[in-house]
Image (cartoon, helix red, strand yellow):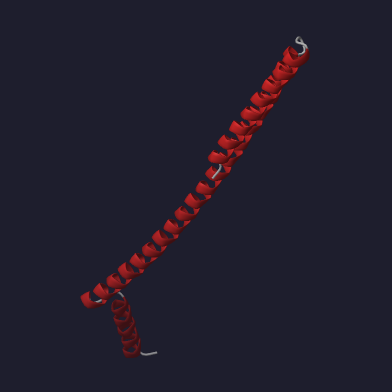
Length: 131
């Protein structure tokens, strides 16, 4: 290989490398920046929409669970009130046993009426508290 050819090859190589290190024109840079910003804004909008949808679904789940809990609580209070009414009725009937005749019958009727009233009140409160 002669020196001229070698020098030409070196010169072409240097020109090629210096061409690769050349920066983009301001117009190209501005276009690339604008495109990157647009893509970023689009991705951000999608992420926000997804997050809003997830938060709405979570709130709906919370609302459903609160309603279910309110129903369970109302049912539990009803069970307690009925059990209390039945226990008080049993005690009242036992007290009636100390009496005789019509007084005993009247006493038991009062005890029965008190239990029925307590159960009705408990049922009304339960039904009012359920969603």
